[in-house]
Length: 352
Image 1 (cartoon, one colour):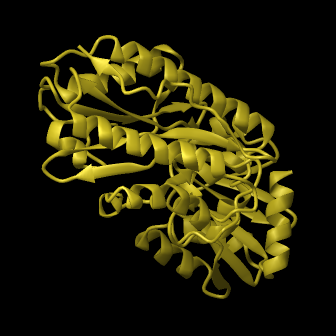
Image 2 (image 1 turned 180 degrees about the horizontal axis):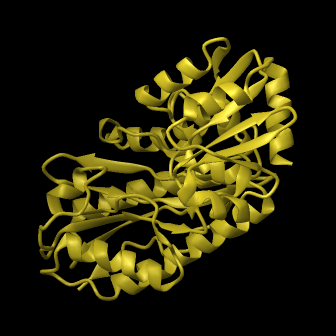
């Protein structure tokens, strides 16, 4: 079914074949799970090109594909397989310059065209099996957060917390982490992507945890900001504003809205409280085989939201020299709104 959809897109664009390098797209179409491979889809054949190390694995995983051995002869193999083809779609946003030079040498008699959008668009609306896999990834992440929050203490290093989060995910069946975890405390919490450091937690500080699981190749994403001790009035105020903005966006999302319109709901609330300049990123992004997929919730996103998309809703306020707050849930877009997949508490959690 997926390959049939790809061929339909190729026909619409007038392409004769699609050459694929990105691992998520290779897995999505073939089930092959190793990195060193190419897919070549024509209207009549499905080829998986890989070297000796992966031939047996490819034969077992990539059902419906002809496995072609490639050692140091990629140019020769591509030239042979595309001999009578005219227009080849490639992933311009994925291949390296060195790979591109090999491709243009092999396909010197063909026209190359950027086909990066084809698989990105096909992967936007998730299939039922994908949704269930992501549900489990989210469940694992919720449980890991609950476990780790119960063990955080003043004096712990951010790096220790990041490690404990990953261990908690793996104990629950995750194969790894979906991105480099963000564990940022105190003034560092104003860094939207403040990855874990050797800093030790201090009483009275905000602590932002942004992490996710990789489960059966699919990703999850969760952010919560907690407080070490009783919050000061401004800390509570900022948290309440971010929560209000997030809840409003969750309530507003409907199929047919643009990403731009959804973003505006949360952004306007934060702006009205006087903190608009401190919310400098988009409201959210799609999640699937990759942690950041399209479409997004942002001030420039004009694409329409559809049922079956899985996205994040993650407003934040980041004040340099003071700290920051972000709250992030994953949601499934439905016919009437959204189902919030993330179940972790959004109360301002106090860690004594």
